[in-house]
Length: 315
Ligand code: NAP
Ligand code: GLV
Image (tube, rainbow, N blue to C red; front, side, top):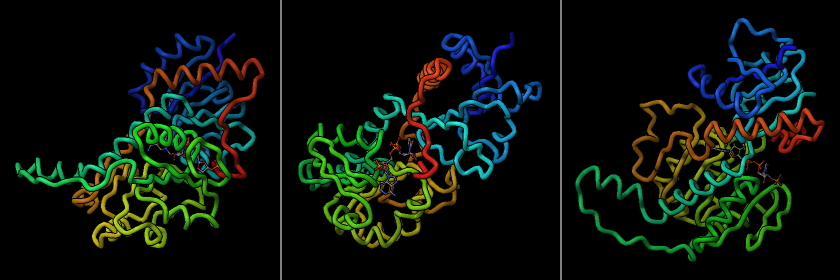
């Protein structure tokens, strides 16, 4: 009997030999084929592993059982107006992804605290720019917007090196040592208590352009900003204006509405902004394949799938 097909669109066609090798070892019961392989019968496709499928394409797979998002955020899949809503959409929530995000956020926080952008500029100009970073970790409250899989890991790591951490989410959290703020009603109090703001929210209509002038104006003067959520959550022009006015003392942006960020974008050259190319947390293919292989086996045994996208919440 022919094996069910897992169709893959993650990392481009060039990544296929690696995916095929990994799944041959970890899920030999499925046949792994490239997304645009013309020889694939759509009716034979049982699983897909994708980051950004073309709208309408998933609806053309009549026997699709599970959609595996190749990232933690599945907004580029969920935005498909023809998404087959009866098919579970699984977010890539591996322990390694949370570990990597915690490390990245910790690096970004310490970079702001220690003036990494200023140091980098001076070095590129061979200039001995001596200065004394003002604050230490215990004096710097980190406010994390989004206390989910990623936000919680970042909170734990930051606490581990002495940062007080507070968090903002849709529902109340009970994380050791992390004061929990909830919803619109508690947002301003959360922002007022935050010295460095970290955005780890999913892309939803509610979070679109949340990182804009009105919110930035609620932070203490000279606060720092880190966005590792999605580019759709920020207005870059407002962030640049806040950096110019001193409302923000520094920022790290890992995500942008247009990726790659165009070479002529003013964000590249701002002396208080660190731009990173959407690399905060992506586990290696081996880890993602192992996760998907485990979940395929669980699904075939009739078990419930974890971390599925909730259409009513939008994440
Ligand atoms: P998650 O576990 O679903 O957590 C999302 C958090 O956001 C939850 O705490 C949720 O609150 C909160 N939230 C959602 N909507 C909200 C709203 N309107 N107001 C207040 N809080 C809200 O997701 P995750 O796995 O941590 O990932 C978060 C996001 O990080 C992803 O969606 C993706 O966009 C981004 N990401 C980026 C990278 C990168 O490399 N830059 C890598 C991975 C992920 P509740 O807990 O109350 O539901
Ligand atoms: C990356 O941005 C992810 O959502 O995993």
